[in-house]
Image 1 (cartoon, rainbow, N blue to C red):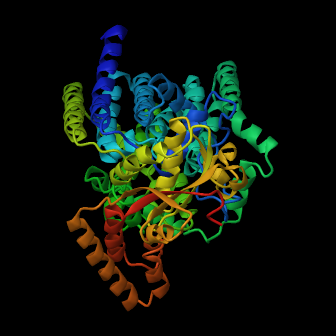
Image 2 (image 1 turned 180 degrees about the horizontal axis):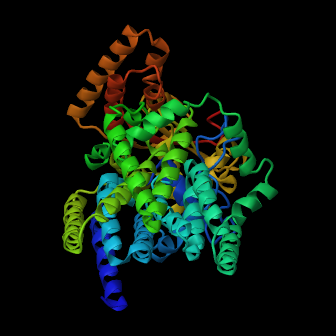
Image 3 (image 1 turned 120 degrees about the vertical axis):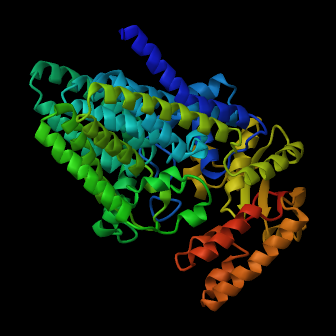
Length: 587
């Protein structure tokens, strides 16, 4: 097949992979999406790109011991990558979702090109089939939501393939590896250590490359690119005290809790080799964060079997002295090893999103085993296998596209409730005023309050929050109460009545997101949760049910079945209101 025709085939494969995401974008265009919490914080920063407040570091994370000294993920590359599409499409929340799909699409295109470089069109088809299965396993939420743990998912696959290319002598892929690694590591800190480990493997391969001049040329290009990509966070480190690098260093060298340990890391790695979990959508990329904070469960037996099969395949590749295939097995081995170590260094809750990258390593393992088997087949059998892989891509993409007809935005009920609050709130504000937004949230730790700031800012109002929230809000969005025209207060649950009792507060809008039946369901669930917590002697957690339901839900003493009840309560929601009061009413 000519090079031109191969390019058309690659383009067709990419179109198949992207088509379900495009369908999802069409569905997600309406009703309007109103981002909350992390996604509202993301939009602040994407909105700031190309301005005097262009971000230098990533999204705030669970880094540090206090909000005042909260650290952020290492770098801003994800904001820069989202910004062009965001601006071209009118700076809407939906435009961020389009930008997310663009990011994933480019990553898949890069992966297909690398696969073609390594094994021709046949290998590109195999990688397309794996990407089709992987994307469907991750789900629509993960691939259309501009959340920082999700954005690197497919660039991680591109990074693994690029490292493999370098290991087998294709040093021209070193800058691609640096770009992909930088995007992953800057966007979500769990990628940082493992990309450094695999990057060291690539560096050793470059040093040992037989063509020293070529290796030096591409190595220099990669170093130069890395310096450019990491300049913004370096600037942050130099101009802020403490800089974000310092905060990250302190957090991970002196963690607030003891890491789970290498034994748990190995067990988690084996659980992620059970691909039935990904195929069945049990990877945690959808559903309630409350339930997903629970420690992953299941048998390690399927993972042990998969590992044994891979080890046998690696031995075969070594004996057959197949350089490209052996290099692939080396990268898989490094990914599994560094991955287990990385998982063992997790401390605190084992949130599912800290380990999503493991499925990418698993995909490469499947590729390595499949290719090893293919070395024993004749040409006719290989052609049949290639046709089957192409069929897998088509069928998986088609099924994924059908699923996409039912795509939903992140946190749809929170989005809908926030949308009902925005209009009446704006109608009560003075265009020339400056407002400080405060909140007392019985449910979601102020998630919608951050979204309210973003929506008011989108419509040209000058709004912000108090100094204590300067990290999630960004410094220039801080509005001291002494400089505010008035205070906008967001309240839910029991706090609505508390604010109604304040004579100086004017209620602007009230929303009950639940139907009458849902209100009765909420009351039944609340009673069951309180009974269970009381039986367990968790009176302190029970006291938080009405005041901080999300905080109660992630208490590690709460059993998984009770967490599920709380997750449903969070999904149902509670009465929500916005008040206007003199600045400083919240002390």
